[in-house]
Image 1 (cartoon, rainbow, N blue to C red):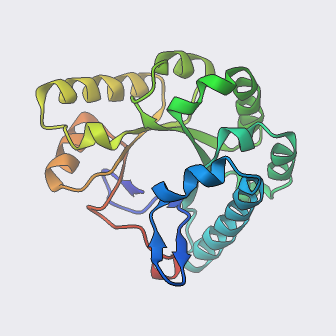
Image 2: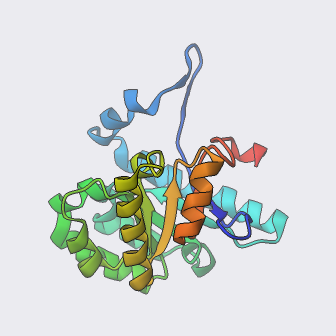
Length: 220
C-alpha cells in the first residue's frame, strides 16, 4: 500500500498462495471457495494471521518502520468467539497495526453478529476495512452502522475511471468517505493515468501492479 502523495510504503496486504509441487501457483479462484466451505478454514485462517504478523513484525524491526498489515478475514471466522479471544491476546503492538478486510457483499448474512464484533475490534485497536467497496447492495447501511476505518474502491471502478459516469460515482464515494473520516484505498491501480485521477480526487492510498505485483516476503 502506497501513500498517494508521498509515494511511501505505508502497509502490506497478506495474500495466501498455493504453490503446488507439480503445477506451480494454483489460481486462488480454483480453491479458495472450496477452503471456505471446508473444515480447514479455521486452521488456515489462524495460521495466516500468525505467519503474517510474524513476517510484518520482523520487517518493521529490520526497516525501523511501523507498516500496517491488512488481512482478508472470512466473516464466519471473525464472529467466532475463540477467534476474537485469540486476537485479544495478541500484544498491543501487533493489534494496532492490524486491519481486517471484509468483503462487502458478504456482510448482510451476518449483520447482527458483525455489529457486535466490530465494536470489540475497535476496543482492541484493530482497524477494519470494506473490500471491493461499491460492489455490494447495501453499502450505505454498513457505513452508518459499522463505521469502517477504511474502504477499498474496487478495481472495476479504477479501471474505468476515465469514463464520465464511473468518474462521477468514484468522486462521490471518495467525497462521502472523507466526510465520514474514512480512509480511501484504490485497489488494482495499473496505469499512471489511473493514479493521477485518483490523486486528484483525494484518494489516500494506492494499491496495485503500477507499484508492485504480489511477491514473497523475502522479496519486499
